[in-house]
Image (tube, each protein chain N blue to C red):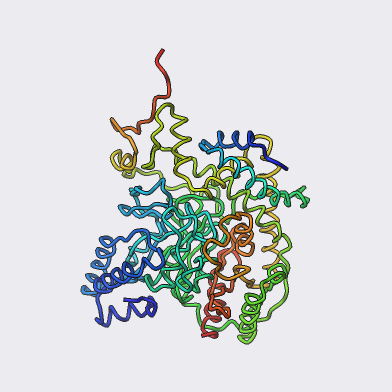
Length: 100
Length: 477
């Protein structure tokens, strides 16, 4: 299995990660090495085995639903306190839609 | 004041016997921790205001004759992936260098309600990803036992502060061994409770189906006390379990006669000789205490690392998507388009290991690979969990090594991610199965490097695990 530079670049796009050329080359090599190890999983016959998505414990279906009552929210000021850029009570981001 | 001679009980006795106040202890502990910190870089942030205000509350309660709480006045450090309201929480990442959480993790809240005095936040691998604490954006932690060596990871700082005597207790988090491995490298006790035992509300998510919060301490007894304080259902975490929390310390009578202990064959093959010798010596101590030992099998162990690095990175790639320059303090100076802002913020902000795991996780979840990697790994996870279930039909506890080798030198493995990943072989299966497990010190190598004995028990049976660990610790001292 050999990951091409182009494949790595595509994954980086999916992950929203800007990587330098050096990083892409290094990443191609690292991911290859890891995936060679991961391919070990294909040795195992898992037909008929259920996937384990979560560690389960004994509890009823609605056990984790909490009581539906009013409670104080975090509040706008606290929620925005760590924003790199805020304004008018909102998180501000660069322009998404251009006006024509 | 060096805290290494202190325990929860000794502090309680000192407070109630008026030998010192919680405030005096907090002031001295902070001064000592701050003075000693440059040696190890174990603390990233100190929280004197918070420490002193809790200490004052404890002193008031004692003066009023009220119960000051199970952790009254005890100096505690918190891994910097666990949120502390008003106290910077960085996850050891440049991205969160200036992040001040607006709320407390449930575990932190419970510690302070019990009178625990939070001295500060401990260094770790960035977003808890690593096995050596060398992936911190704020520099590695040095092992207090041997300063040229790593403390283990990812909770390296939390292990180091207890070993160094700059905290009595600490909290860490464990996703693939991040509590037990540093505990073994630094010669302290570290506990990964059953999945769901401790609320993760306020724990920065790495891999949600594997993340645990757990205690570090010198003595097994102190970890048992701390776990009891932080354990139990929390309505803020839907994965936290309803199972009742027993009084763990009440069961620590040192008598484990007749207990059946399993030794997994897969854990004793290929074991570096010195570590292997120390583990076998610990097994002899358990036999002398009246335990019956037998060889067992955990046959899917050789597949655990591959399984883990698919599941953990897939979950991480999704959990770390939130650090995109919108809500969490850091934004790159790339304002042309929103997507450029995301890409550059993340590209500049994450360190190499986080990027590697985000990339791997995104790859295994991407179209065409999901079945081959992610679904396959989840099925293998079922087989690993089944290994434990079958083993626990024969035995009450399983013991083995925590790590194939003791603490390695700083820089020794940084350029070889696969070899770093492989060092987690004995800890990862416990997280995948969700069973409680811990590391208890079991001696040192000829070079003076600590080795940890790992103990596993059935889901929610931390009591049995603590009983074995405590009896061993008392017998070996």
